[in-house]
Image: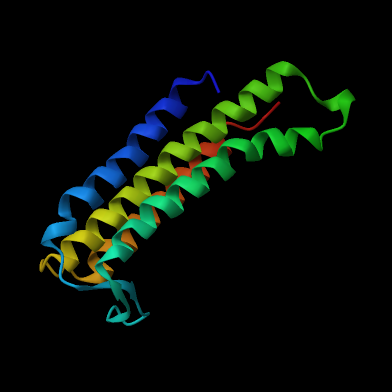
Length: 146
């Protein structure tokens, strides 16, 4: 957990909570929490639901932080080395940053929509999803463990 990328990850998660707290008073009593395949809102919650995504992201953060350690526990001792373990953890921490930035983007888009700035779902989400997948695939492809 000495990797500085974990600190950056916590800053991103903190930003999610700060944004939720700051914009909470400006949100309508009922907010949109889900959009269907057509891009139209189909899930609603009271405005306290704005804190779901920051908490959900925090839980995913802890899962993703400990996942490399759990995976490495399953590797046979003869195949494991500290160098490979560190390399794997470094790759995974970069993925974590990419994932958290994607979650931040989705959260900001959702906040803007609920504040009245209705940005087209396909224009906002599809390109972000493609970029997230591309960067993730490149990260794991370019950093194969030797």
